[in-house]
Length: 201
Length: 201
Length: 199
Image (cartoon, chains in turn yellow, brown, green):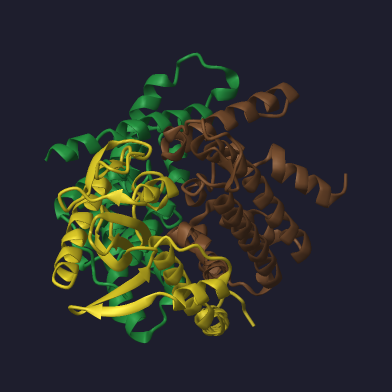
């Protein structure tokens, strides 16, 4: 058969595409369940991180997560964990960054005295610039940070604000828009917490 | 030197795609701020390159000329999707960090270049070897960049702290411009040594 | 999966041109960037072609994604579908331009084949997908990224013209110096983020 003929070309292209697409469909089906489990695990780990609960391997994550109480207050899903003398409450947040939606988990003390931790679930900021919101030094700033006047201020760019009492975190060098976006997201999130927790505590 | 040996030397050094033509860095430079991500990304590229060369070489006798480029693209895209699915299922954290950059392996000019230049006119196994070694040359340069970016930008190597706490990280190394500087210096050093060896520059 | 983000269209446009330039911050489209930027005229042609193709393909891929791939639940095929759509558009543009005018073909058309494998084109489509943009956001982002790429290659071509004759160590000549120059440009572009903060 003439390999340069139109018929052969069309049949060849069709067959190749058909084989590849079929294999991919199977591969996708085979990994679907695993991918879903991974997403769930990632979410549980993020919640535990935000609540400042240590964990080990995947089974431990599940066990520790079973210790977290999932409650609904005023139509919002909250994750609660009891510490020695206070209750910690975590909630998912989302807001717009520079490029796309930033989703994450923020945990606060129930009396809104301090934030306990922040974890990022998903973001699309530029790697090396705004994408640094997902680096440990940035998230570490939210560990036991005092909330001053009901909000968290984003200060000048730096390498992590060590002062836990000033209610301020450092912005990210070269990522003004992402830092601004975080300020808005945090302020919305804290007022959401205020209205949920304020009525009940 | 055996054929396989000379291909190895060629692809790793004297004809390294990054040194000689600065090809194919688009898909990977953005993830060079951490060694782990770079390593996984490079392994992905090696896999795609070796398998594409193998496949192209096997079906080269059946390939109609008119759709050659399209079928090659299809083959590359097929293996890239496989890599993407595997990462999602078994290395979810890295998959999240690499994000859309895995998909961009498709447009890595080296892959199509090797398929055109080598696999089209050589038997399958040696083509696969050519693809893999081109990938090794590529990995070597990227790992060198990532080594300095992670060491100076975070004070860690593969996520393990190597510098004492007193070390002040160089923020510039985390931001995108540093990748260009380091790549420029690596090309400079590479070319200087090559000039001294008397190889054609 | 998620709703589209609420983004200020102005800052999206500005950021895609300057502060997070597709080339300088995301490293996309480097291959043709380095070889073509030797020459001002070709840079101009390629820059224009990239801008046109980027705007059209990103919008088209958005439509394919939202009206074909997602309803059929075959999003995992998106890499293949996107790259084929890009190749098809480039081919069609080349034919159309060839019919319309020879001058335009000489200025723009001859660069089109280079574009299919330009990572910036596929990159913008993939970013658009992962960020759940609306159609309007997609068009702004595609057009802005194209302009940003255009601006970057023109600026680099101008700088290279000036440094061409400068005496530099032999090993640094050519790609080495160019890549370092791009590094400085990337730093300068990051500086634009201060401008946006004033708005």
